[in-house]
Length: 268
Image (cartoon, rainbow, N blue to C red):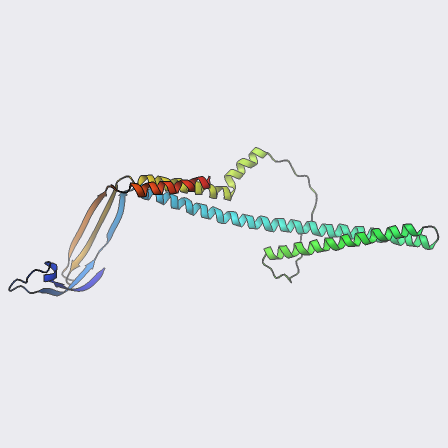
């Protein structure tokens, strides 16, 4: 809808002709009221249709990439969590070996005091004890590093203490069917879906480039209530169809086709 006030220069509309006697040099001002719907739609345009399909595949690829990134983040967190559990189990095992080495050292020292044991046995037990303590320090450092990495992945405060609620336990892992796993991966993995959508989008871009050589049919129209005022208007309408035939677009079409080929090869 629009409401406009216009004043027309007749001499300019007549291409600068000499004014006619008795005819004013201008018309207006005129108040023009215009309201109504209009439409513009392609009737036959294969290039536009293939571009639409390409854009749809690009959107699907972006969605699949987003889900793939989310799965990668989950995989990283789960892997870090399991690695932290393993590091904590290593600390417990090292602590057990330290306790055992300490008991053996105390026994060797007691035997030496009683005159039953020798100094070499006590020295050997002490060396073993110090080695186990060193291994315990290394295991504790690995545990703290794993906890820090887990806090970084979870976006937590590094000073915040993390307590894991699970513990590692052994269970028999069944042997999977490789062929079934591959089929399931090809049908469910989001990164594969993203790549497949990218290939389809590139192929549709190539088809759209090929279809630039074809003619197109376009329809336009409008219906409106028009007049100098709101109460004296009449219905007016305009409908038209255009048929476009490309004649001198071979260079651009060839360039579009050549540009689409590397995209297909890269995606494949």
